[in-house]
Structures are given as structure tokens and as C-alpha cells.
Amino acid sequence: MKRRAVAPQCLIHFQRRTLTHSLDVNADMELGSTVTAVRSTRVLLGEVHPAVVVIKNGKIHQVLSDEEFTEDAASAVLDVGDSVVMPGIVDCHVHVNEPGRTSWEGFWTATRAAAAGGVTTIVDMPLNSIPPTTTLANFQQKLREATGKCFVDTAFWGGVIPGNQLELQPMIQAGVAGFKCFLIHSGVDEFPHVSDCDLHAAMKQLQGTGSVLLFHAEREVQQTSGGDVKSVPCVDSDPNQYTTFLQSRPDVMEVEAIRTVAQLCLQYQVRCHVVHLSSAQPLTLIQEARQAGAPLTVETTHHYLSLNAENIPAGATQFKCCPPIREAKNQELLWGALKAGQIDMVVSDHSPCTPDLKKLDCGDFSQAWGGISSLQFGLPLFWTSAGLRGFQLADVVRLLCRNTAQLCGLGQQKGSLEPGYDADLVIWDPEREFEIKAEGIHHKNKLTPYLGVTLRGVVTATIVGGRLVYRDGSFSSETLGKPLLIPPRTTPEEEKTDVMTFPPS
Image (tube, rainbow, N blue to C red; front, side, top):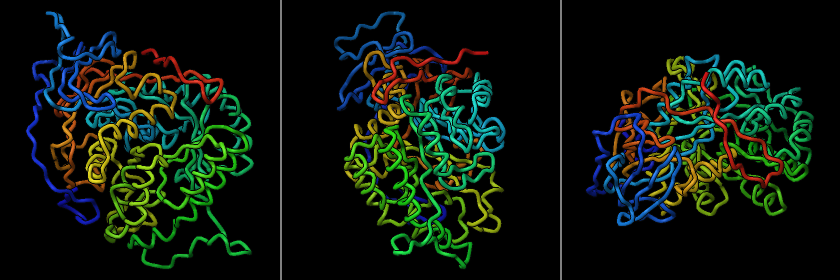
């Protein structure tokens, strides 16, 4: 990446390549139109091939060669030249914050940003909305809030907090994709973290449901008598220095949390998932648990793969998140684990707030809100760095589309161009570069550590359910996405075959 703002060296640089590509995505086709076919010389079908993706009733009907495709007069064919056509991204870690904190974000702005980034499905986290999605009534309230405001499809995680274990099964029946809990303070008082007792109570409720429990995997740790576990250091340093914040959230906090997760996963055989892994140190624990039979998956985020601690300037609190961005050496270990299949997926963990909560005026990392906004830029962030490390376009689909869809019960509807899947497509140019500028950001709040960064990979059009929702900076006037209700499973292995959409009010 190339940067013209704070700390140019804290992002990966790349050598510019020039290729000629057709970027015409049929400017005469109106936004909101139903698309009956998409033609490209680069359609990602495992490998890249020339093809025509035929769409019928919002689903992929056929994928044909150009010779096999017969265009009739009624066809609305989007010919995108040699732009890449691939499944829309499924970002399963997004904080929309509605209801309750719509000054931070909301369904309207979050899903517009998603569409501009080629994300066709998001899964909303149970916090930081007020109320959080921790009861059936709160989930129903969130569904009402989301209806009519979504430019892309939206599913929902529920939350596990102390004492709400009897709400879990009703929420599963109502359509949540699974649940999230914290093993440390969440940052908001209305979503308290759970104790070991709470976890055992929740696991007993989730056994046999086929649902999944997501863990924010950091724990406060103390020195043991044998000295095996290091205590969290008492930091007395300058709170404006990033190293001070980093030392307050050491790797051992993730290691010990994931040790707990692995033990619970093995004991109860409930699907478990580690969100936003920032440290490479727990990877051995995760691999050992999987080899022992734990149904355990793990994600990392774009910021852990793109940013590094050594180059975060003093007072640059837009870089603060939890767990923290770690050193460059750790980052390369994450990339290696991603290539080896030890990390299953990459997500945004889009966690915006109002600019005042970032405390840029004083630059105090200890007081600033921890969260990074990047929902719109996940695809180019990943591709800019991944392309340097030998990743292929097929890896983008695996890590940003297919595996994320499978995690949240959408594996038979999203993340593939196979016939029968939802006609959710992103059309983009992997070679073209652009600079992130505030005026081009569609998140509600524009503060992000990526301002001024030059990335590779321009999204030119996004199709949701067979309709053109975004093209070249403009959006459909109609909100084309829908809230998704995930039917319950009876076993962890059972795949979803249908996804219900919440009817409009």
C-alpha cells in the first residue's frame, strides 16, 4: 500500500503495475435494475474463465460460455469486459450499532458502505446497539429497525451475557446466526462479559442445536505460582505512546482465553469460533484442539494483516482496537497461518464511533474507543497485501466469501457462483489503484487509519439478489437488501438449505 498521511511505513507498499482493462459496466443500465446475465472474460469459478453468469428470480441459474449463451431482446445483460466477476463478499463481523447508537453508524450507512465495497451480506454483532441483541424481544426490535434500511442482505448474531442462557434457544428458533460473548470487559456496560459459570450454562443450552458461539478471546491473567502465566504488566508509561497500550494487552491474554475456548469446545462439542485473532501465539493451541476433535474455527481481520505496531505514531488513536495491532513479525506469522489454512477467514470487524470518542485531541490510547472502521475497504485491503504474498483470486473467495458464509449458516446460499446460489456478485478490477479519501467513504463517520492510503482493487459494481445496487460511486434509490433469518440446525454438520427473509413492514 502507499500512504500520504500518518505513518506511511505502517502499511505495506507495492510496486505499481499497469494493465488495460475494460471498466464499462453498462452505464445505460439503471441502478436498481434486474440483471439477467453478467458477461466477463474473467469470471471466478474456482479458476478464472470467460463466462456468462445467467440470473433468474434472484438466483444464479446457469454459468455458460459465451458461445452457449443466447441473448434475447428482453435480456438485461451486464457486459463488464475483463473486470473480475466473483461472489459477493460475506462480512460476518460488523457492528452496525442500531438501535441506540446511530450517531456511530446505522443500517442505512453501513450497508451502503458494504455495497460500495462489494460486500453483499453482513452479519451484525449483538453490541454496540442499545438494547443489545441478548433477548428475543431485543432481537425482534433489531429486525424492525433493520427492515427497509438495508442495501445489502443482513443477518444477525445474538449475544451471551450473564444470566441470559434461557433466551438462547428462543433466539435460535427466531433466526439468529449464532451468538457472541466476551471473556473480558466489552467496552460497553450493557453487554457484560461472562464468567466460566456463565459459559457452562450457555454451552448446555447450545448443545445439539448446531448453533455456534463466538468468543472475544482475551482474558485478564495473573501470575501463577509456577510462573507459567505472565501477569498483565502494570503500565506506568506515557498513554500517548502506542507501545504503552500494546503492553497493556499482551499476547498471553489471547493465549489463555483461547485455552479456555478450546477446553469448552472439546468438552461440549458445540461449534466455537474465535473472532479477530491478533496474536499468532495461540495458533498451536487452536491446531491441537482441532486435531483432538474440537469444532473450532478462527478469523483474523484486515487491520491485523495490514497495519503493524512499530509504525503507529504517538497519539494516533484511530489505530486503537482490541485486541491490539501487534508487531510486524507477528503479522507475517498470521499471513503464514492464513496460507496454511490455520486461520479460516478474514473479516472487517467494522467498529465505528463518533470522532470525539477517539480522543484525538489528547491522543490518549487508554481513553480512546477501541475500534476500526473498514467495512467498505476489506476487499482492496486484503488483495493489496495478499497479492504480494502469492495469494490468488480463488483465495479471496475462500477467505472472504465462502468460509464466512459457512460460519453463519449461509453456506448453501452465499459465497459461490454455483447454480442455485443467491445472485450476489461483486465486479471489480484487481489491478486498478485508488486512494482512500474522506469524501469517498460511505460509513457514517469517516475517521479511519486508512485515510490517504492507496490500495489496489476497485469495486465497480455490486449486485444483490440479481439487482444492481451499486455502480461507480452511485447507489440504487431502493434498499435492495433484506434482513435474513437463519433456520435452526439440529446438528453441527447440517447445512442450511433455506434462508428466510424478514417480510417488509
